Amino acid sequence: MNLRRVPTVLLLVLQVPIVAAFAWSYTSLGPESQRQVRRLVVAKSQNIELPLERDQALQIAPLYDDPQLVSDEQLAAVLSPIVPHFPAKKMKPNHVEHALRTWHVDAKFQDPDALSGEKLRDFLIDYDQFLKSWKPEAEGDPAPVPLLEDRADDGIYIRWGRDSNSVSVHHDHLLACLTEAGLPLSQPVFTPGRRDLTFRDVLRQALRDFRYDERETEWSVMAFGLWLPPTKSWRLNDGREMSFDLLAQRLLRGHKKMGTCGGTHRLYSLTVLLRLDEQFDILSDDVQVAVFKHLESVRDILKVSQFEDGHWPYNWPTGEDAVKKPDLSIPLFRHVIATGHHLEWLSIAPESLHPPREQTRQAAAWIIQKTIAMTESEILDNYTFFSHVGNALCLWRKTTPSKFWMEWEKTHPFVPKPKKETEPKPTVKATPGKPGESAVKH
Image 1 (cartoon, rainbow, N blue to C red):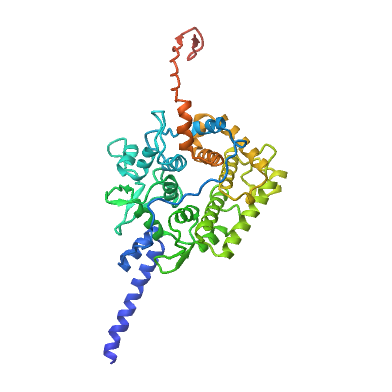
Image 2 (cartoon, one colour):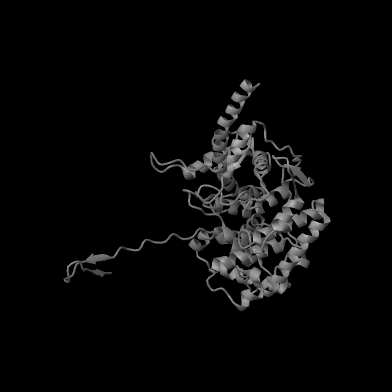
């Protein structure tokens, strides 16, 4: 017996450093690399089989049509500078995502230089179109980091982060934007390695990858909400149950300032869940009440945090102190973010969650004036924020940017801007003076 035990003990002793080395290597990997290792070790399919019964996503219809908040002329003036004109080389997916989310797939423009909804869509879901913009400029240059990555289990992973301009910035932001833009699940999606997958595979991969404690869940929650109901709960790959109750509680967690764009995206996603609950009863009564109370508390903060000129500051969660002790270090574009995003979620929220309508109209008047005053280059540099402004104001007129713009152009056809005449070059004539000096004569 002893002779048989010795090799076993010795074998276990030898395995300890091997297991320890593997554990150390595993913990040093990033989250995505860890998931790949788990797939290889477990060696089983991670497909999530959910009853995705619809091909088109649900839509959250706007509730109001207030021409006193924004007139047709004002709406056209705000939409005009965000008609998508992006440089052909190295288009930023983040800009394209926001443009498509705002204008939708059906958008068409009389301006031949504007990017239609279909062109915006194709840049994001067709690797060949993406590569036309991001192809290396010279032989030997590194290949761009692709936006889409096909997986062995028939999924499509969307690369995201801030380490490359060729990928999405936020987790599941592209998924949510394509969803709101009207992309069906049957839409073909072309990755660097495959041409037999669809948008359904993008959604399934997002469901596989989702983790409750991720830093950004706003766009995952919104996308899942627009695709999954009447399903209320489902199982994650690790066996744990996920539900819209848990997703809502995740968004409610933490200080109101937490989250992207000063916490305002959380408000939009919570409002989406609230509206979906009205139709599909996806939230328990307790969670529905908690969401409503949270948004009521935001309403009360907006009542006291608005400046006289109409804008809500980026530090709006501080309430009255934001006005009494204004933070002059906050740049203008952040106030544009806060005001535009608040107008957006309020446009789909029940009126009981609104501050007085006059305050909302003052906020709209401020942001309309700021948008119209911006130059083309300023709009392009801050396109993502101003796209929310255009979308929000359209929702307040119970329409979409594409529908409004195509009707507007019927009576206000596109007129090309006159080309700037080239000014004659000044003649340079040398005159006596100190060495290196010259005088310019016009």
